[in-house]
Length: 144
Image (cartoon, rainbow, N blue to C red; front, side, top):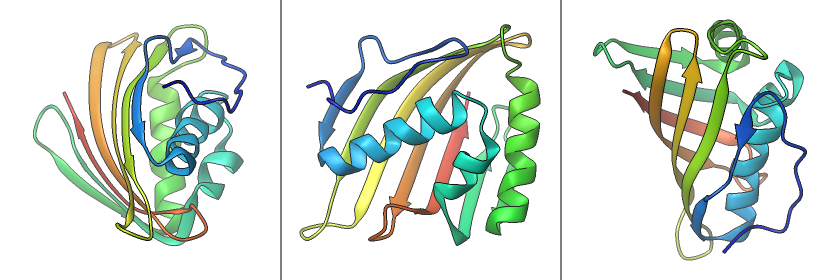
């Protein structure tokens, strides 16, 4: 099932072979966040994807845990991520999205992706919780 919501892919982003299932509105919110906001390196769009009080928890491949609260801290973290994924030197592939939505469940998504950067290949698994306005309120990420 490929979502019909068209996104212009830039900066080495692809969703070729994307496997998606579940709530279509959540799947499209995920696709927008990863492929439009992040993929276009648009900090303004990235931050619009998060609620003002959002929290992001991450565990790096080295086992380091970080927590970022609110848009200022999340923006600083994405500034670091943008530098690690320089335009023209990186690729990003959205591989799997599994989404559940209200009214029977909370608005959640599990996302699997891979990226190639100047520092090597990275794989990520992220769990996103959305509010009723499709803003991310919690993100839990593991990078390998």
